[in-house]
Image (tube, rainbow, N blue to C red):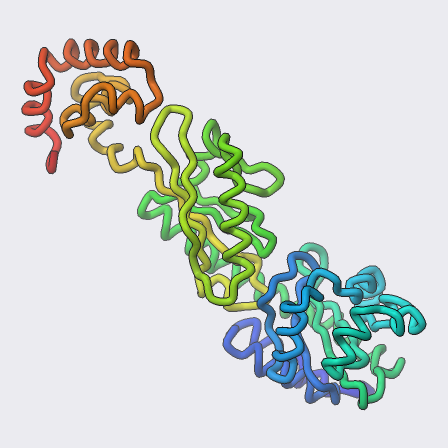
Length: 362
């Protein structure tokens, strides 16, 4: 017979998987049912300074982050036993003698008045989280009988992750589809900042100017790559920031790709979410796409020639256009000769008047 009210525990966690607003309530239920001080939900991979916790654990988690213990968590040493058995304790991380000398245990946990813990595996494979159940220094350590009950509980919690993952996937796909409808490129990132989903518009941009390497979005400009990496980390590691400053990548053919990192509340409301941020990409050439396609259709211009025609019609001179597109003056002059020939014009003013009748708003 289980020591814990397993049905109540599973029901609370299952409800939170469906309704993310109930995660705090669910973790309070976990602590109450196991006779513990508090409970938290940690990722095994991609730790962030924002986790779901019962209110009793909030102050200690603040110390965990502010003191840098998030990068020195000795309990992660117990992951092999945790994955194998479904549950782990401090004994799986290091012997008691070593814990007595460990800064993590003596300078962080003890001042926070935290004692024994049990980490219960939730999920399997790539979808694994740790349900960390914490007791105080005054409370008894988890007994072998309690740990056996928690190991059995672990096997029944896989459905919680599967449900949350399925709902999160549906939300993520819906977000990408919404950007696709407006022909905006978008990529979903996991908690480590790696690309895990790409919409159709973004797929069209992957190539000469942008690529995905080791799960990271990169361009040909090392400085822009560094800025993007820092922007993503700043956003993921911030309590409040939902967006960061956009990052500009130059295109090989001229023009720019502007990348906007942001968090979408609907995607990140669940601690079990596979998606924690989204990158939206704007192509500075995209605003001219319709005009370019119109000119190409009517006059059989190349894309470069159409861009030049539009730039001249908007008042730019050849030198400025050449500089913006990173082209030589000779190349631009040759393009202009071709534009005049194909459009039947011979002066910039004449070209401008003609285009103003063809392209609305010009």
